[in-house]
Length: 126
Image 1 (cartoon, one colour):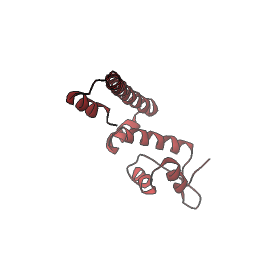
Image 2: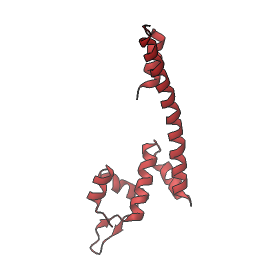
Image 3: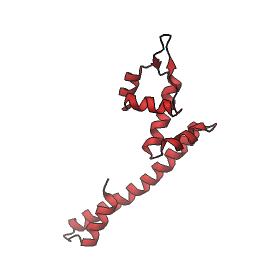
Image 4: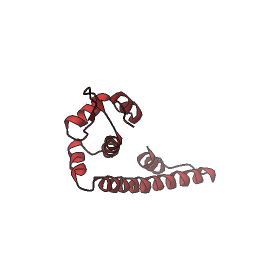
């Protein structure tokens, strides 16, 4: 299955301009139809997934290029995702604990202190 730039952009929530930028940076190389139109097949779609995953993790395009240039790019991408998700999981577990403790205090008829509220604000804002 091959997708047009419009369909690829729509399905992945990016602009056609972003697809062209990734192409100019050498990160993504679309196929060309006989008429010269860009098209994206399974390999290009997998590569786009990797680019977008790394971009959502905050990596700049230059660093994404370095990661994707490695021989085992998919494993490198998954490793970076795993590390970020583990950090997020730890942060979310702590935030959940803080919210539960605050609710327990309220349930016991206690008021939340300024420090309680400040900690909740700092550590639970998403």
